Image (cartoon, rainbow, N blue to C red; front, side):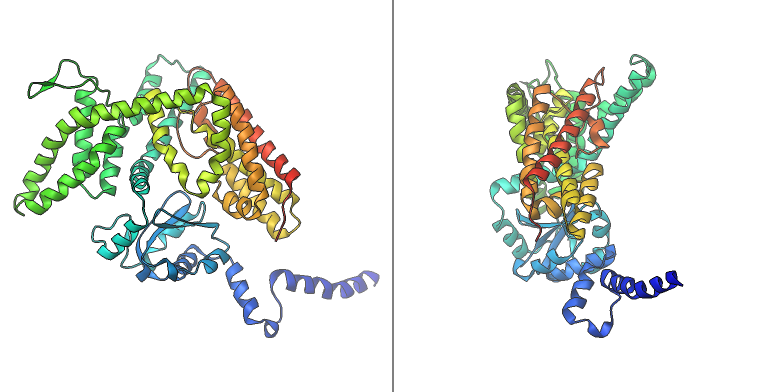
Length: 493
């Protein structure tokens, strides 16, 4: 009887708590404002989110083109004054907004591709990537907001990013081979040789994949670009005593050289457009690829190849010089990495990373992200542990786990940037861990975003020492990110 009374008295209390926690309150008491907040806070399906985003950015008629990267939806808009930015920021699924280089970027996180795939029905007359029939006024408005440097970096980034999947695959194959050797696989045997040669092709012929993606971005013939690039690698790489028209061909190693390709494709695009406009329409199909190939090959051999070799050498020398003051330079690069991500400037390092990998088979500069990513993960988890609000705890934990397992954008945009002090703490922790990484000379054999799974990028060579040191530095960055955030504290709004 006593237990029954307890249940009867406590029932209304728990029912009231259930109403308040999960929103099962009397509908007659809901105001319009409460209903609106509940609709925004409800977890949307990918289709609903895509529809809402299109509405908030001014509808399909305000979008010129759209694409996405690893964590962001990217739009080029006709009139940014039509964007309901406050409405976008209220969406739980939107982790941040970056307006840079003529692109309006909405940070979604690891679900970005699923949301992107749902956009097409709500953007029926809008092209993805770079539309060929882009309206002149939209093109002009976009170009006005891009500086020459932004234009160049957009081209370089758009050309290189699609090829990273090949580099990641090859790097992981090398990592598996390195582990297998530690467990007894003969590194002189045929099995090792087959898989090692297969992986090395990704780096040697990277310029071919790059030529195709660059040509696609500039809307020129990707197959002609790839054909010319493959020819330079297989026929003219480090060629001796060869000449064309009686002129000696400079000795250039085209294997893995990306700079000549980045110089060649824009010129090919201009030539392609010129021939399309000036050749008779019945001759375009036959003679345009012939003229393009015949003109561009000598330009590559005598102009772009030597220039590219010179620039590539400068980049390698710069990286070597950087590592001579490793602890200081890596500390600065690691500490600034979260800031460069916020402003979208981290892509400036991509050509350097790719050049490092293709010339020396490893990259030191990428490891700045190792320190920064794990520091941000530690800072986000610290927020989850120390926060008093349930919502902040939840976001902190989930963003921290996501940073450890996948991408750091949820932690950066959803936790660190809004709370400010954890961002400072993460930058400080990344700087300390970066100094250790520079001191130990830790490097990676592939490229991508560092997390627990991709620590395998640091496996390579004949020993596992580099990998063990990388794991130790990752743990150090995480612990310091957590500790610094705990000590600095933060204010919950």
